[in-house]
Length: 278
Image (cartoon, rainbow, N blue to C red; front, side):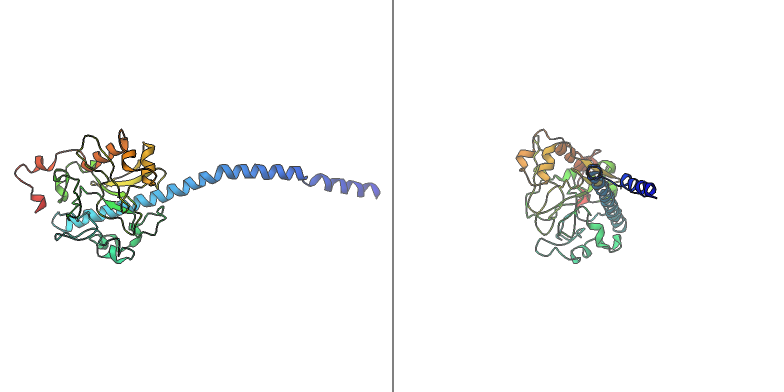
């Protein structure tokens, strides 16, 4: 009887963990969590980026359908009405925190009146909208500021857009104010020899998708644009100014290329005038 009891206590001691063993297990688990958590964060961001890309493709389809229903005329890329144009959204920084600013825009009925289509899940701001429409796509109807985009590169009719797969339409954007103001063209002068960024408090590029952003093009396809120059990310995060981020920057060259696209310009397509602006 004594021997049996002694063996039972011995087996119990052998089946237990010592304090040192527990500490080793906890350390291993902590190390594994340190490895896995960043990977899980990246996976979540990848999912949000895919959802954002879907939003942009939906908006681009709506933009195309609007042109089909309106005698080939695309809606204005600006954010407040003017000169008889119907803008894709309508508001300003003083009124832009309700669904009305989206519902009065040209594309609302084409996105099934769904406000979520205008908002990126990676956008943690209080803004109701996360996207901008390129100035080359019928932007800049007002004369409230210097227009840095020549009519040679501006399109008003969908079927007149040459080589649409090279011309950007929608893009991720951001603002420090209540509204992303105006059409998208964060370039001081797209025809300058030395290109320079041009951002404002109420409009900027964004790097919320792992140092890049989502875009769509006039033919309907989308692309993820990963910035190549680290200064572009710093500019998007408001850490440096436009001059510091410019100069031998591959990203600004790429952006100008996609704003202009390839193919003929308007003067080549319409050598006797510009019927697209009437």
